[in-house]
Structures are given as structure tokens and as C-alpha cells.
Length: 297
Image 1 (cartoon, rainbow, N blue to C red):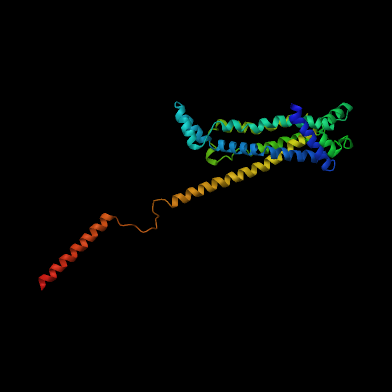
Image 2: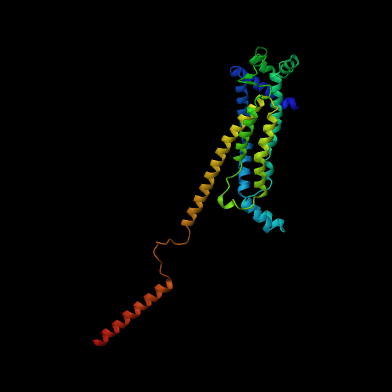
């Protein structure tokens, strides 16, 4: 089941791209990386937006938790008012969980395609689909070229350049997942969510960088390319969310200026009671003047 769903599709996709892209295995990995990122794009976008939203709402969440710690029903009601759903934090982990079967499958696919022993070649031909063999003629592609610059794509990087790049690109990607710290929040105690995110900024890149020390160079190249695409996606997501926040604030300002309170330069209205008193006095004055005129006559 694992071979049918994960490994065999990757093996056949890499062979197709390898044949189409001038027998360049690095380009084949790059195109497969783009395809995988496109397939997982909806989940990744949702995870990034959810993560940024949850972190920006942490002060409100903590305030509600302290205020209604003895009233869970009221706490959930207040959470709904601010648009917080605790289950969203769990769904944000799906892209990370999805990465592991992809990485294991790609690792096996690269090892299978770049294997040079007779047993490895036999395993490769056994995994190729019939229609792919008809399109590509796999026998003419073997053995697949495994050299790129100083690298043997089936072996780890001997100079540790790729593991450093894996760490650096993943660290930048993780940094984009956390909102910028405001000046007024710098002296405050960090929330658990913010602390966990800050911890993830270092532990995840260190973990994958360490794995890259023993992974094939081809898989490290996939890591780096995937992280670079994630960095671009993170910039776009942050920019779009900033525009949405600015638009929301703009609507709020417009609502304030068009509200009931009068502007400072607006002419003052005379109250009905005042205007009634003035009209009464004017009528009284005109009546007394008419009486004086008649008395003189």
C-alpha cells in the first residue's frame, strides 16, 4: 500500500521529468518540488494564516482565560466573539504531519532511481508503470546521472554546505510564521503560544539540518527548494494579511467620521426649548410696542 500510494508515483514522476528536462536529475527534483508544493498549497496557506492569526490573538485569549477561568461556558462564548476556535491550532499541524510521508517516499524514490547495483536496477524497473515505460523507454535512461557540481545526489554532501542551507532556509521560513513583535509588547511576559513558536524557530531547522547530514544530497536539494518556495509564500501571506488589517482599520475610521457625534467645525444647532423661548420673547416685545403706539394715538 505504501509503495503504491507514495513511492511508485514519485519514482515515475521523477523519471518523466528527468526525460523531459534533458536528463538533469536536479531539474527533475525541482519540478517535482513545485508540483508537491502546489498540491499542498491550500493546507500550507491555511496553516500559515491560522498560525499568524492565533499568535496575534494571544493577548485577548489570555485575558479571557484569566477572567473566566471558573466559567468554561462563558469562556467559550467570549472566544467565539473574538473569532477564536481552539481546534484551528490542531488543523495547523496537518501540513507538518504531511511532510513526513512525502520525505520518506522521496528518500526511497531517490535511492531507488540512483541505485547502480543490479538489484537496485531490477527494483526500479519493477516500479515503473507500463504507460510511463511506453512514453519514456526507461531502459535508455539507465543508469540515471547522479552527478551535480561536487555532489553525488545519492550520497550526503561531503562539505556540509547543503545541511547549512537546509537550516538557514528553514529558519527564515519559520521566522515568517511568527508576527513581528510590537514595541509595547517587548517588556511583557511571552505567552505559551509565542514561546512554542519561538522554540519551533530553532528546533525544526536544527532537526532537519541534522537529518541532512545523512540524507542523500538530492533530498537536501528538495528541502532547500521547498523552503525557498515557503519563504515566498510566507511573504505573500503576510502582505495580504497586512492589507486586510489596514482595510479593516480604514473601515473603522470611516465609521467614526460618519457617526452621530458632530464635527468641531459644524454649525451649532439651537435646541427647541431655546428657540421657543426666543420666539416667545420676540412676540411679547412686538405686542408691547403695539400697545404703546395705540396709547400715543
